[in-house]
Image 1 (cartoon, rainbow, N blue to C red):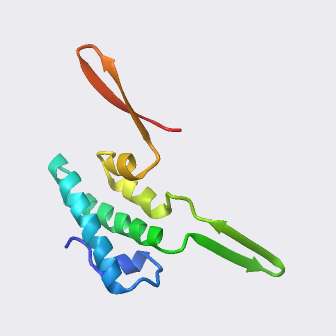
Image 2 (cartoon, helix red, strand yellow; image 1 turned 90 degrees about the vertical axis):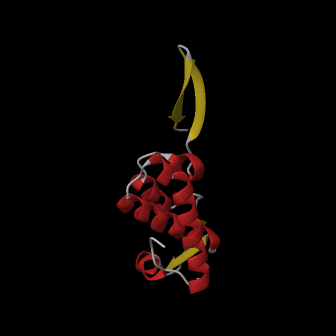
Image 3 (cartoon, helix red, strand yellow; image 1 turned 135 degrees about the vertical axis):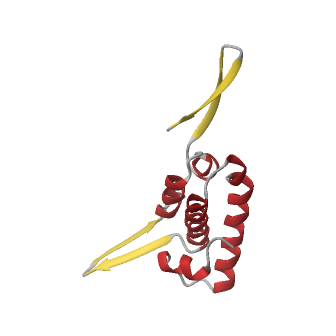
Length: 123
């Protein structure tokens, strides 16, 4: 495995058990191996994408409701679908696949000459 549970725990504050984190690391490694290795992405980037993608999976599993209180002011809100770990995984992915498959980027194709060209559109 490219990334260990200990390495994941250094960036992730979670109450999830070790076996759950191992499962997320395995899933992230499978995705990285199937989607990024064939595209020639080099090892340091593969490890970084795996680590931050596993952290994204773990935080998606935990409760999304956050609460805080200072004095008599209490706030309660829900985290969005894209968190900082997914943003970091996207930043290490030179192919853009993490953003396409896990992010909020929309994809479309249009005809250019004899072929097709695909572009990402930010909404």
